[in-house]
Image (cartoon, rainbow, N blue to C red):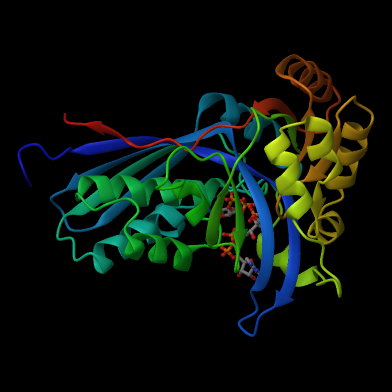
Length: 320
Ligand SMILES: C[C@@](CO)(OP(=O)(O)O)[C@H](O)COP(=O)(O)OP(=O)(O)OC[C@H]1O[C@@H](n2ccc(N)nc2=O)[C@H](O)[C@@H]1O
Ligand SMILES: Nc1ncnc2c1ncn2[C@@H]1O[C@H](COP(=O)(O)OP(=O)(O)O)[C@@H](O)[C@H]1O
């Protein structure tokens, strides 16, 4: 280790919402070619990664108190995704692969404090894995935008590269193609405001993709991209699309309940995010988003919160 090398790195890993998701084709390997527009939002897990003299990877993962209370309230009623044990955590796989790929002799210790609901279509596991890889890269003095690192990220999970942000500077939204691993940053004309509702039932991404259908004439994301540049909530709301919403609704009855509750509020438009089960509404501003979140929370359909778009942040060093 060099004298000025950080011992540990921390990073806030954001959740994402899919504003647009269209399926283009089913590939021979079972994955789907898609076009999706994702935006990072201010709901974060916090991950700390440290180097270790013992040549292995260990990961601790737990809910922060507020989210733990939400999970506890619904435990036993419906399947709220449990947090995986260390060996099944995507972060463990990410750090193990990182050690192999970059021939790192040291081991890693990681701890994750979670607030992003699991199995919600908000990308929590992918964001944690991206944070772990970016932190490990910083600890080992490897450039965070090194092509080998991005390649590894894409192999580990389709959504992981989005959470690396852009080497060109601050990025909060992007269009993802391929199976989701090819990222092009998208400009947005201002901060976007949302209300997000996560029902007390998680959904498996693989199960939703198993039930999906590729349309014969897929829609294009072009109008959504233009609406984002304009930054007007009403236009963005009119372009929301999610081709996975039907198979997601068929997988969990909660999704229809949440969507009808959101439909009764003054949101500008609403949709399922990713493969569900969380749904969101586009709001004209922060005050409206908070008021709607408060009312939806009282409706007993899960956990509701206001959110806004954020830039994907850089890891911070800890020399201690
Ligand atoms: C649906 C989306 C939309 O952003 O997000 P989530 O709902 O998971 O957050 C993504 O496409 C999810 O990406 P991610 O969660 O990284 O999926 P992966 O781990 O790569 O794949 C999980 C499973 O989903 C299916 N899969 C995933 C991506 C893709 N383009 N086509 C697929 O068919 C495959 O069956 C795969 O085994
Ligand atoms: N660090 C992690 N955080 C949350 N879930 C994880 C993690 N690592 C692996 N998983 C597993 O991945 C599944 C889905 O991950 P998540 O990102 O929360 O949902 P989604 O793919 O719907 O966005 C979880 O149900 C859990 O079993």
